[in-house]
Image (cartoon, rainbow, N blue to C red; front, side, top):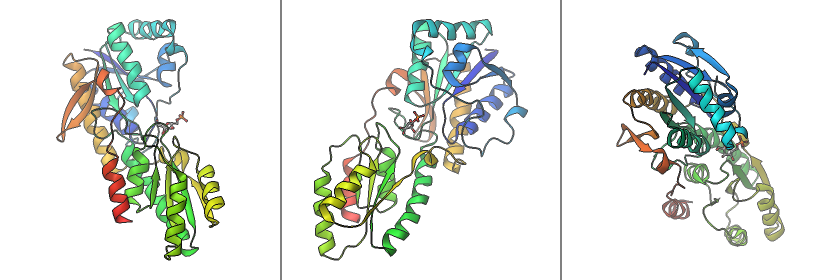
Length: 317
Ligand code: F6P
């Protein structure tokens, strides 16, 4: 394989993955083209030549130097054919896709329907790729959220208030569960589990009678809006409640060492796997060794550990 392409989505650690892919490709004297603006750029033929120097100084930077975009065109057959045309016209023999569930689904289409040798690198703050223990970006997101939460707790304790903190996760409660456990929060609401806000209110009122003065409720954005939860708490308990929505700060920022190391290992492994002739796979670590999982499996809904987290949160807070 002489020439490969790379496209990405967005989260902390993706630049570190680009660097690892580009430098490993250069190590094998392969040419590498960056595809700008994700699948939209693939459809439109927005390419940029990458070399060792063009990825200097990006290891610690959040986001993606290649930019990214959602592509409505790629959802159509015509768009997909145009994307394949871009690859063929530019003699790109293999493709590396760095991103989350949507990106991996599109990568699977290119590999299985159009026979394009394609390897995925899992990178999303949601950590929702099946059979992949940890995706690039998730560790940074949890750490960013914890840093913010620790500051919120100072105010919650000083002013004896209840806080409802909304974290990211449209379909997945990974960040919420990690943050709740690592931050010592009393309650957590996630998309994967039905939740009764009334019950939380009862617990808060009961706790309040016994002298418990501050509570932090973590809510994943896909479960409920923090404002609505806070309003119910105020109306039911009469206690002062404030809201903090952490939002996109969780997706940006300098990647943690864990994310940089993961990006280096998975990025380099993706090039090795592509060179060896494998396709339609997503790279991952298994038992701390570089491995792969079929993309078809990787895009299935991920089962996350829920009950153990809820049990611990109840026992420990
Ligand atoms: O997939 C990661 C994620 O950050 C989700 O947690 C969030 O809901 C979504 O992306 C929002 O992404 P965008 O605003 O780019 O559609």
